[in-house]
Amino acid sequence: MLAKNLLRIPAVPVILLLFGLGVSAKIAFGAIHGIIPVALFAMNAVRNIRSVHVRAARAMRLTPFQIATYVLVPATLPEIVAGFRVGFALTLLGTLIGEMFASQRGIGYMLVRAMETGDTGTVMALALLLVVLATAASAALLALDRRLRRHALAS
Image 1 (cartoon, rainbow, N blue to C red):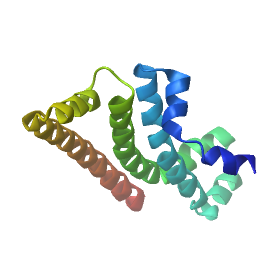
Image 2: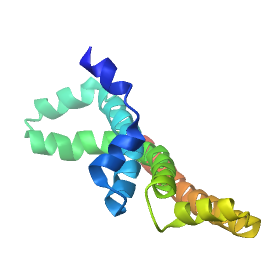
Image 3: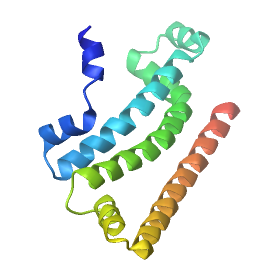
């Protein structure tokens, strides 16, 4: 029952009350938006590890650290990187929202001020900057994801 009531509390005012109007609020907004997909992808990756790999590692009498190093990490890394791709996009969005509502500087702050004053040139320039940044980061993480998946299939 308590969990249901906690989910109804709006996050923005609570974060602002806890962290104030500084950098810590921006970090909190970004972290809240980005941690959940990474955690979900990581949990799914661990759940989908083939049990035969873990049983074989135990049969070879590997220590838990060796099992983690040689079996779990290589098997889960592609999924975790896919989670980073999704998490990065959401973190960027969360940080931007944090800057829009809880900051006196940053791209989100500049975007809100430009919209308030009707400065369409600045709005378009900031939007283009965000699109280029997000696309470049997503392309880099996608290339890393594909490389890891190719390597995982080869081994």
